[in-house]
Image (tube, rainbow, N blue to C red; front, side, top):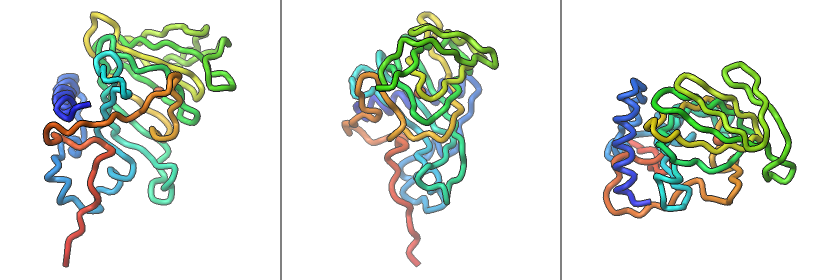
Length: 231
Ligand SMILES: [Fe+2]
């Protein structure tokens, strides 16, 4: 993805979240200049990759296959001594017909929440023992109500509704046509995007970035090391 495209998407996402009365924490708006002079007090943000995350899954068609996320809080399996937190929260902007491809998580249980805007369409399969699509039936919890799911069944979440996706449940989602973008929340176990995503079709989780202008905000994988004050 081009940096100029990411910059534009971040600006649109800021407007989208604030128009839905979802306020991001202050570090969402820290500039590269601010990061240059920020010390180890912000290590929780760096170490747990909190913040902006934009991906086109390496397919270079962001509006067809892509997702924009902001990780608000997270723990860290590898650094439990420093970060014992056992949960994570994200907010996402999912556009109309913008697909997050089929994937599941081996470890993470996640609630996907429609926090406002259009409807969110989610298609589901259970994974089989080879991490492929299974033909078995299973069930999910939609706001505390058990629902039977046949392979490939669709759940449509309108604003306010949420679904609990257990580990090994394949999911793909997109904003329903005609409803505009969807503000999607995620409340989950600790999130590890480097090791806990099994995509049905092998896809990179993070895109390559072409630097054609200065970054407006760093993505969560880009923070510079902590600034150390020389005494
Ligand atoms: Fe997921």
